[in-house]
Every structure is written in structure tokens, then in C-alpha cells.
Image 1 (spheres, rainbow, N blue to C red):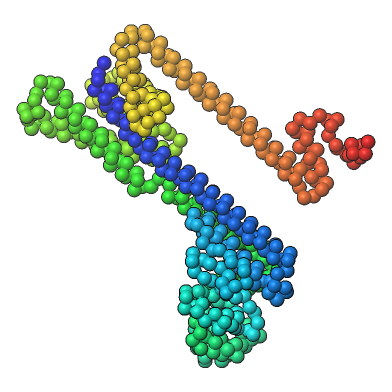
Image 2: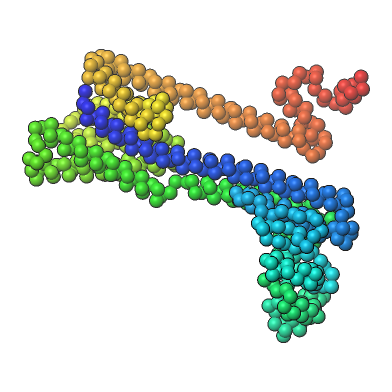
Length: 483
């Protein structure tokens, strides 16, 4: 038994197992992020549902009567939407509704907020803000801020920046605002009590938090929350996908490992020949360098193959590494045949043995990793045990016994092909049955009552309901319910 062959196979499978482990770590991290994001979405949806419950209570009690109820609705909606937006991003809920008719409506992470949703006097809630500022003059100086409808804030921002020559051409029927309103807004902002810096937009427009519109608004905001969740999901998936940069790092690492192993084995081979390291001459070092270079090249090919095949095709790392090993071996035998060192029969025989060696290595590594679920170690131990047993068998068995083993391997290959064909046939049958079932189910769920009735009859028959138990006509229905 050649211990160097086993050691080389171990090193090759170790590279494959290491790359596979890196892939699995990336996938596990993505799945963990997905789980956390799903929990975050659940919290955000519950926050939105709680806000709707509060709004329903306000409407039921008609709090604030016709003129003031929308202000309370706006407060409940703002707290629910803002907290849900934070929760779905994995952050904590920082908005707390005071709900006490005091000078502060909401506390946001320690900051006082006062909401003003007023459409009177044509000043886009600014008059209501100034009334509050006059009543509580220390509100702004102590860090408080006013929250007004988003569309009102946008309009105030526009008017505060609009020069008078442009404002003088405003016509209410055309622009939705008049020159007189522009002057009023500029006058209120110019007295120094409140500035645009003391205002911030709410999550909703003025018209979105009225009694007749707020439920549609909350439904729309809930859909936005779910869209944010989907975007987070997509971002995590994109982050977890294999990249050229990571593939290059895996390739370089594999090249270094296999090149270093080739260097060490080349020196060990010289020492076994009876030479000491200090006695190695230039030719020896040239030979060692050549073997090391081949190791680096093979390692690079192996690392790249394992990384890209395991990530972009349904191929395991152990199989990929063995394919690379077999490919190098067959290529070498082809070169020897072209040089006239072996004939076609020897080429076929050696190629078969190389592929069998690679198969034993792959299967042994796969079983070892499954039995010993420790990254890399399980694959190396499995490969070592499998190769040692295989080498003993190959060295000790007679040609007749080896032929029996090869025949068994061929029989297993034929069995695999037959089972795969049967599997594909069963899969196609399952898909066809599923398509038929879904078509029946769609008809049974049709909004057209007659079509749904006929579809239900077909569905019942398809799932095995006895013919005499199916209500297939109006007479059958009457008999069932009235007798």
C-alpha cells in the first residue's frame, strides 16, 4: 500500500471539504438572517394591527367629535407606522403614544413630539402649531418638535422657498394655493416663533387619516412594511450568493495548500531515496520546484472547480474534487499514450483504475463527513479509511476477484441509471397529477357560482368521494338538507 497516495488523496479531499464548509457557513448565515427577519416582520405586523385596534376604538367612541377625531387618529397611526417601520428593520420601537390630551402627544426616544393636523385658515397646520407654541413657549427650546401632515409640510417647504415674483402669479383655482396664502405663511414663519426646522412631516397626508380613509391608509402602509421585509430578504440573499472574489480567495488558498503539500512530499521522496536535505543539488531542487508548481496549478484548478461547481451546480465537494483528480490522471495517461509509452488497452485500463480510485475517495469522504460531522476532519478520516481498505483490497485481490468487483460496480451503475429513469417518470407523473388537481381546485374556487358548483363536483370525484355521496344536482342538495 502506498502511504503517499493516501496522504495525497487526504489533502485533496481536505481542500474540497474546506471549500464546502465555507459555502455552508455562508448559507447558514443567510438562513439565520431570514429567520430573524421573519420574526421582525411578525412584530411589525402586530404593531400595525394594534394601531388599527386603537383607531377603531377612537372611531367607536367618536373621540374629539367630527372636527377633532382625525387628530387622534393621526397620532395612533403615526405611532403604529413609525414603530412598525423600525421593527421590520430589526430595530426597537421608540414611539410611545401619550394619549392624555397634554402638551405632548408622542415621545420618540426621549424627544417630545406634538402632532397638528389642521386644515383651517388655509395655513397648512401652521396656525395650529403657532397656537401651541404660544401656549407652551418652552416646548421648542426644550427640544420638542411639531409633526404635521406630510402634504402640508411639503407645501410649507415649497412656499418658504418660493420668491415673491413667482408667488405673485399664484392662482388658487390653478395652483391649489393663492398669493394671499403665500403671504400669510411667510408672515407666520417670519415672526421667529416657529421655523421650518421645528417641523417635520408625518407618515401620512392630511386626507389619509380621516374616518373614511384611514383603514385603506393602514392597509397600504402594512403592504409597504411587507415590501421592506421582502427587500431585506433579497438583500440577505444577494449578500449570501457566491462571488468571483470569494471564488478567487478559495482558488488561491487551495493552490497554496496543494502546492505546499506537493513541496513537502517532493522533499520527503528525496529523503526516502537516501539523500539529506542539505545534500540536495540544483537538479533535485529543480525537480522539487517542478512538482511544487504542478501542485499549485492543480490546487488552483481544484479550488476553482470545487467552489463554482458546488455553488452553481448540484455537485458535492467530494465528487468535484475527485472529478478533478480523475481528469488530471486521465490527461496524464493520454499524454503517455501520445508519447508511445502505453498502448490503447493500457490507457483504458489505467483510466478506469484512476476513475475507480477517485470514486472511492469521493464516497469515503462523503460517508466520513456524514458519520463525523466535524468540518474537514470527517472528510479526511473517511477518505483515509476508505482508501486504506481500497488499497489493501486492490493489492491483495487476484485479477479474477478484481474483475468481480468491477462487474459489481458496473451493475450498480446500471441500477443507478434505471432508478434515475424511474424517478424521472414518477416525477413527471406527479407533476401532471398536481397540474390536474390545481386546475380542479381553481374551478371549485371560481367566483362564478355555477362554475364553482361544477368544479366542486369534479374535485370531489377526483379525490375519491363515492359517486352516491356527491351532491351533483339541486335535487341532491334538497334531499340532503331537507330530509
